[in-house]
Image 1: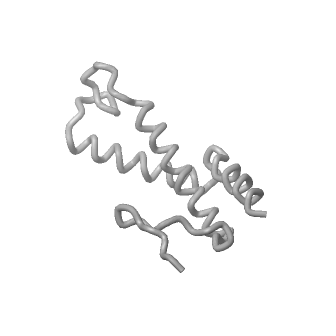
Image 2: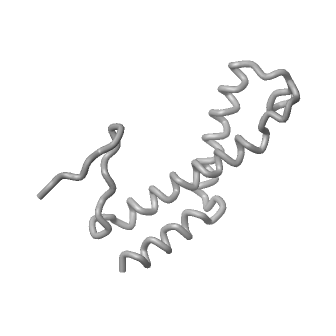
Length: 98
């Protein structure tokens, strides 16, 4: 039996039969959190003005702080239902494995 290849230190995807519902739900929530964080990041993107996220000048410290705040906010949203994306992913993938 051959071992699946891992890319960039990441483990290879599990075969559908070995995915537990808990693992699938956790992965879906992580994916939703990433999507929400990206939406938040783009929502205050740089459109040519010199103002930062909070209306003041942007510097390395405020950019880092804003990025961390966005990630935490996105994770909290995803844990509490978020946009409903994770539920749709779980439903779709669960139906495919049956």
